[in-house]
Length: 388
Ligand code: GLU
Image (cartoon, rainbow, N blue to C red):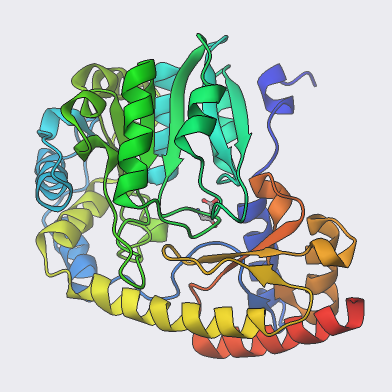
């Protein structure tokens, strides 16, 4: 069978593949400690679940507008105004099938053959693949551990060509856990405006900040950059709603209209009653977000201390999200082999850095319970000892 050429240019999602493998091993009775997908282990807070149940009981079971329930679009616009100082109305919002799908819709709406999209390395696994699916060219810019894996304004300036359409910013970052300071964001914003390109800011980890790190949404840096900004966001990480698949884009109206046209011919509206859960997430108390953040903060400290005590592994302390990116270059093997041996010999699941453009690293997600962290790190310590 001859499949479309676009498929052969795209690699499968390793984050999803390894998570699926770890979950299948667990189902078969294998005692796996999984640090694979970035998926909070908490259940969705009860008031959010109850809102979806009530919506089901009230018959919110039908098609809705492709761009999302008006009430949810209002709640999102309100959140972006009050939390992030971004002046959007409901017309600037499209509700999508998770944060990932918001980015896919954006690439489809914006990128065409010949367009370049700048992506700092390490990057989240799906960014370059989505650009390729849209026919564009991902342009990778390497960062360093010394610079905390953040792109500098000069690096960005130098990577921009007449073909550059979009820059992908992700702070707090998956897979590095790094957070750009407000001043760093302002400096990046200046380059965006000076070179007149667009920026998509993936802010899905916005609420997961530690040790006083601050999040500035790039669109709030100046009115000029606001006009060139698209926000990608979702409910999965902060409200433990990964399986609900509710995310969104906030952007100038013409982009939202274009993404809505595409959504109208592809997925239609996001599951109607799930959207009512999302309304409750934004309209209700934010106490649950803070409780989960505090749990992640404790786990981050514990896993960081355990990792940095192991010979051969180095790691920059993250100040956001729930990932540790660990340098494994002392082990003389690629990240796929490292993770494969770790899973086979010690039943610990980690994501090979090659998925994020850094084959001398692995990523651990610490969105899991403390017992798994302690047991998993004991096993990793044994593995590391046996390989050095
Ligand atoms: N975003 C999460 C991760 O990087 C979930 C998996 C995925 O969507 O790729 O692990």
